[in-house]
Image 1 (tube, rainbow, N blue to C red):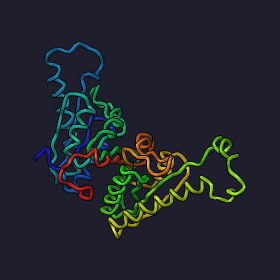
Image 2 (tube, helix red, strand yellow):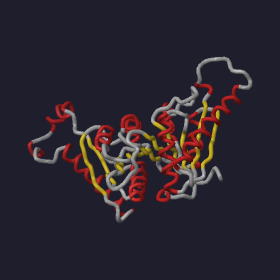
Image 3 (cartoon, one colour):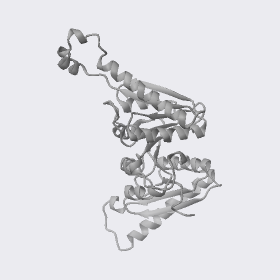
Image 4 (cartoon, rainbow, N blue to C red):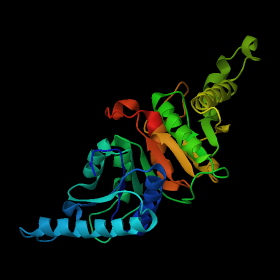
Length: 312
């Protein structure tokens, strides 16, 4: 198999969380008829202090190979029809995963790690990988039931390029699974302290004018409506619902994703109104989402590969 062909790569360190991620990735690879790469990286720098002889790197490589091969055997039990290879490595975990993401369709990791070898910690590198990977990164956590008619895909949107990339990805995933798509946006109310400071400047003539909060909600609703229209144009038969709520973006996305099979966010954002900085919420939802989270890179992060967003 060509290692540079479109594939799904999964980080595997032998931990329970990584095993769940491996199962999820294998199911996705089989559904899309894509090769699967089982990647195990042993970072000997991150291991417990000790004295290592000249043969230590070779021993670490062998250990990584053994763990990756066990991951391959596990994946073959549920996905026997696809090509599966192992990619053991010794080095920095995040650096290796980011590098291989340039030739992957998507990169899958668990939400926490620390497997059979100290230094193969996947959970601790999830943030760095999701921020810098060249392909979508899926952090598998919570309920891993696949998307379907009763299991929607949710995407957090503002009007930034990062959110638009996330929307295209989410619409594709929902359409291929026959699942509804929920486009969700949030806005923040002005705090009492702000009203106390600026309230006296409102004159009698402007007393009946729309408040900032009303305008913020109107803008948020417009963003959600535009995103829903874009998704429908992309997939005319897709069922799309809109969600507009007030509060912290991360908290609202997590709260509203209770029945979802996948939550999709961009790596960075900050659209036309303050309060929906998607780049900052992606880290928060990884911690507490009730389902797998897909973090989608903006177009400038993704190197040319001859594959369009709609093909992913």
